[in-house]
Image (tube, rainbow, N blue to C red):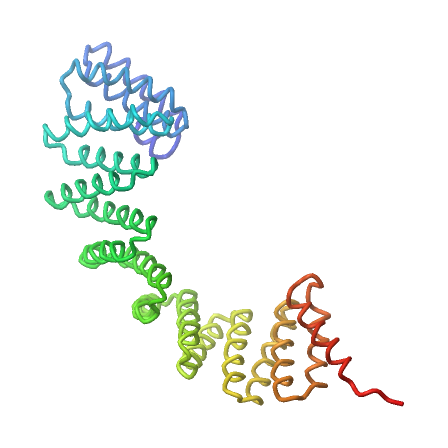
Amino acid sequence: MGRIHLQKKCFEDALKDFDEAKKIFSDLGFKQGVGVTLMHKGVVYLNQGRLEGALEINEEALEILRESNDEHNEALILARMAHLYDKLGRSDEALKTYDIAKKISHEIGDVNTEGLSLIGIAVLYSNLGKWKEALKAYEVALKLFQNHGDKDSECRTLMSLAILYRQHDCWEDAIKVYEDALKIFRYNKDKEIENRVLIEMVDIYAKQDRWDEVLKIYEILLKFARDIYDLDKEYIILMNMGRIRLKQKCEDEALKIFEDAFKVSSACKDEHRKNKTLMDMGYIYSQQSHWDVAIRTFGEALKGFQALSDKHNEALASMNIADVYNRQNQDDKAAFYFKIAREKLNPDSPESKSVIDWLNNHINNQPSHI
């Protein structure tokens, strides 16, 4: 019952159950049972944030388990104590305790606890800024899990390794590790985790301006989103792809992608996203000097934002229309829309200053009448 209450986070009930179990084992003279029960109490205390109390209970349990020659649980409790030392800021004791746990678990062939100890050592070194030592510990743990065919632990270690590489701008190493992890996730057909890894890879490629690589991954993520009919993700991916194409000066391709995104936002009946997509489409038409289409597209977005009472984006749409007229030297029409924008903008915003400067310049350039 104690474990069930622990899983349900009913900590006080769990403690009562473990105290009853401890009394029964004590009455029976079953020391190992007492030690294991104390271990469980230590886990409850840890979950309650009672770190010092957890450490005291684990020390008591350790002594009993050693008397019982229970090396498996001795190694496990040492690893837990090391974790507690680390959380309490006692790094030297944590490292020594992890080393003892690692040695015992290695001697008895306990792969899980040995791996747990190695990961703990790696995290400890990483937190201390000793990233090369952390890297070595992760690599030893990774080899251990690979040799014993523990794919789940291998994947977790690979993900931790990738994070470490990223923290030190070792982008190529991080990518290689992510690719190794992807092979396992794809073999296990774990689409959700595969998705998350691909998104991490997108972030790395984007930092390096490797936009073609980003687009390749977005194509995979787009297929995932469509396969599970996730319109929200599909829209976000399409918008990101469109903006990358814009960055690459591939305006026609960007426009086609934004048109797909517009269809998705329409299917979702998401008026805000529809209008934002129209703004991106209008920008392309403007860049291509398709003035009438640009004004019509921005105008549609303007009406949409007005219906939503979205003053800020209403102002931005007005500014875009004004800019199109301004580029055609139709100053009066530009001024009309800049005035609409001025009324909607926050007076302290950079956009407001830009609009006011244009309007003042427009007034100063007006011909005087005698």
